[in-house]
Every structure is written in C-alpha cells, then in structure tokens.
Image (tube, rainbow, N blue to C red):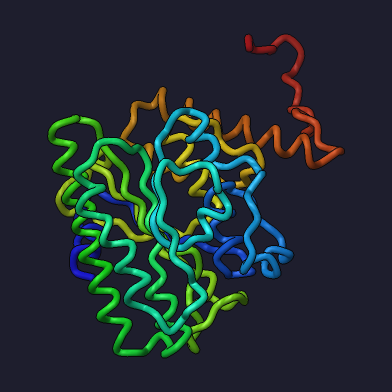
Length: 299
C-alpha cells in the first residue's frame, strides 16, 4: 500500500494501532466505533441478524444535527442505522467466497459520489479482505492484490477530498480503520493479538506536519474514535462512550480550544461514572494537606 504508507510516514496524518475488545466480529465492533462503548458477547449471537442500534451514537447525533450521511458496503450498517442514511447500497457478507463483487459494488459509486456536494459523511465498508482471510488465510497471494486495490481506493478518495478543499477551504477528515483483525488462520472472533489489533489512520490537511517529523503509531482503544469524531464534527459525545479524545487530532489547535475539547470529554466521562458507580462522588478524594497557620494562600 505505497500511497497509504506515504500518508502514514510523511503525510498530514496521525496513525494508531486501535485495540478492539472481543468478540472480534463485525456488528459489536461497528457499535464500539460509533458509540464508544463496549458491547457484550450477546452481540455475537446477534451478528447475523443485527437489530437497529438504539444506544446513543455518532451516526444518530450526526443525523439529528442535519448531517447528510451515505453508506456503501457491508449491510450491517443499514441494519444498525435503518433510517439514518440519505442514500445506501448494502452488500452481504454471507458469501465469503466472493471477494471481488462485494468490493466492486462499493467502488462503482465512488467516481460519482466524490464529485457530488450533497453529503457530509460517507461510510465505505469493504468486505473483500475479510473474505480472503476466511477462505485462504492471511498469507494468501490474494491479500497483496486486495491491499493494492484498497490503496488505490484510498488515493482516489484522498485526491478528490484535497481537490474539493481547494474550493471550499474547509478541511475534511479521512478515516481508515478496520473493525477487527485476522488470526494466523484467517479467522476472527477471539482475543489473540492479531484479532484485536486494528489499524486506525486519520488524514486531514488540518494536521500540520513538518518535513522530518517522524511519528510512531500510538496504541489506543477502538472506542476512542467515537469521542474524536463527535468533537471533530461538533456533536455531543455519545453518552455511554468510555473513549478518550485522540489528542494528536487536536494538538494543532490553540490551547484554549484544546482545553475546551478535553473538558467536554471529561464532563461526559464524569457523568458516565456518576451514573454507573453508585459510590462515586465528585471530589471524594483525600483532603489536601493544610497549610501551617498564618500561611493560607489565596485560591
């Protein structure tokens, strides 16, 4: 993936290794990415029959704020968010031997949709790489070809976004991520390092990068994306999110804005803690040491 590698190593980007919590199957991982919370193992049973997601999440908040959202790819998104997209084309993951048509069904929309200005959020969920893993394993020669194809897709999207930015002068955000990893045998669902480690790449012209600025991917939680997207889009952080704002995404902002964003995240996490830990009380930490008499300082 030469173009993606260039973006990671030299581009206006921040890259992370995001840890997914088991079960490492699609539906609970999409939920984690969009709610910032950690769904339970009951979701494994529900994975093939995904009911609509009622928990507070970035997609619902975005729609409520008037954002126009389009989804192409894995139909799990449409099942979880049945009334949220202004346009969608779902592909089924049932036929794992198909690793070409499932992706062509997504890519065929790109040329047109990238030229249109009638959307705010575009979600593309490609299934081909996952299917190759299931059928042939991670060492299959088909993997390299598929990664090369995905690299071309990323380049097409990034180039189109940069071209649009020259007219609008507003920075966009391109997020490349995986819902789960892949075991040595090509499967997923459990908790091996290979299955829980996912790439997370944020690309935006809002991220300044000077020549020679070497950045090593930081290890974060998959649940950190929801808070980061919410703050980036000016939306409330989903109330059950346990994630932290990915600080590198805002480090180029003025200090006042950085503190405001961190404060939003802190208030949301504190509220979540208060609601879920009955014994929790704000300020219930040991009293600070007293100043000797006559040396009290003004607060």
